[in-house]
Length: 391
Image 1: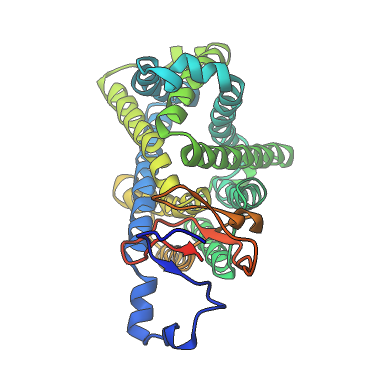
Image 2: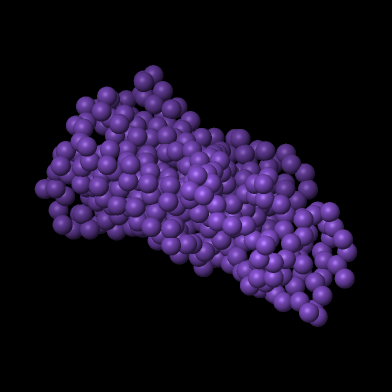
């Protein structure tokens, strides 16, 4: 027999008496269940990331267009150096298995590849602006979503519901609407500036950058769920500063010498680095709370925030299509966050169940049926939901 525990013990849904199954709730209760605190908090956290991305784009736009400082590698290098000073040094002073040297002995080559992927994902997309139009970059950057979904499905075993795909499609439609507004308002670069071969190179660079960014996001989700946020950021700071410094010295040292240094440019570099550091530091927190797919969908509103700021800063022309795009993306986010994703499990794991507050309990083989449930929710347990132990 299973010894008595203080935790709530329930039967599986198939074996519960009919009188114990709650009747369907009313429309108000269903609405409260959908728009719960966890869902609204997840959406709000995603919008914080979008605002940080908006700050990055605005400062980068000022540097490149107002001061002709085209130094994406140097800007990334400043961020990696700051990550190194904060998080890598934190790992260096730790003791035991969480020490920097102990981590490097076990996983140095994995973090080396992650650092290279993270550097090149940003560089390829920024480089693509020299070859293709802004509208093409907006649309092709959406390739990150199938990459993240497929990698999450096969490597993180995440399972999605139909509502997740409907929400993702709605978000992508919002981006398409925004790209159409850019064309109508003349925000895109002139098409005759880019020759056919040149545009093809730019499109390939965007697709490559989106693929690498998707790989980086899924790797980060795995690390923050199984290891730690400090380890992730410390290793990215270490390898990112090393490899971006080498790439900077080879490819961008001439551009860096052309920068007309003054206090305004210095302030823009500080602002860019602060926003980038905040994004890198806060993103693992949001990934652990939601998922890599969720943060990529949430970040779609960053371009709209940049446009709204550009109405005042760069005299952009307004179009009602931008508002339509904004609300389409928000509806897509609501649909996506209204239901939880699941992680596929082997049903045999239920033969040995780990009680959250007790030892491993072996379930008796005789007279017991393995539950048909093969998924476990990624969302945080709320206080209203008791710990459930299979009996």
